[in-house]
Amino acid sequence: MWDEDRDIAYIAMKHEILAGEAVRQVVAEDVVLDYDDSGRLLGLELMNAGTRLPAELRL
Figure 1: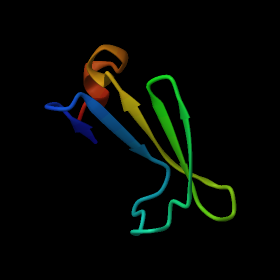
Figure 2: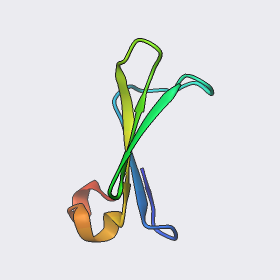
Figure 3: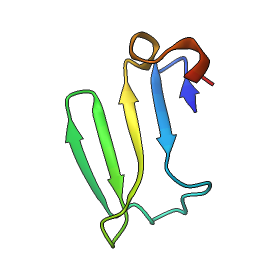
Figure 4: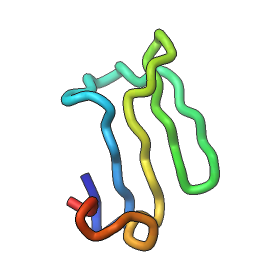
């Protein structure tokens, strides 16, 4: 999912992430990784996505 106004993309590793399921975030330059309480990656948030992702991935 790409928010064109904010230029942020979220790439989920599962179909539905429930509220409160992401209990830990790791923040790096322009990337936030969301993990559940078992340490499994739930998704990643990518800042400046318009310049980093190919057009076909900006949905």
